[in-house]
Length: 185
Image (cartoon, rainbow, N blue to C red; front, side, top):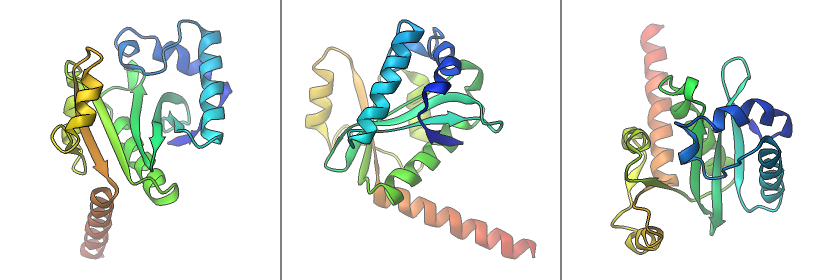
């Protein structure tokens, strides 16, 4: 479902990213295929330097359908950036990709917290964030950061996924699955 970024995926990802429903919400915008290749190469190099974490989201047939990244890493905290191609909206890929990515970030890469800044008019992303049982509103707890983000003229809502909350969610899911397995036996 996730793999490290690869230049070979750009040919499939670029048209998905430039769809008018997707493009306004993509952090790393490219106006040509060549520019997208260049940005992807820069992303891969930045990951090698430890500045970010980025993965390609795959469907069940291993086709690239979007990307998920943790940008601006500082003190084991980063900002999440995710986009899926329009044909894959509303099919459960977003939730699954996030859970796999968060597991890798928290348990393998020692990230402490993940922040999500979402434009206030991006109702699709706001609803998706509110559905995550391990995400909390950080508008008040990180009000100075929110104020700094909103000073650019864009109005954001801020959510946070702390490692401990995601860990509890993961443990609860594992316990429920074990209980269900025992009931079926």
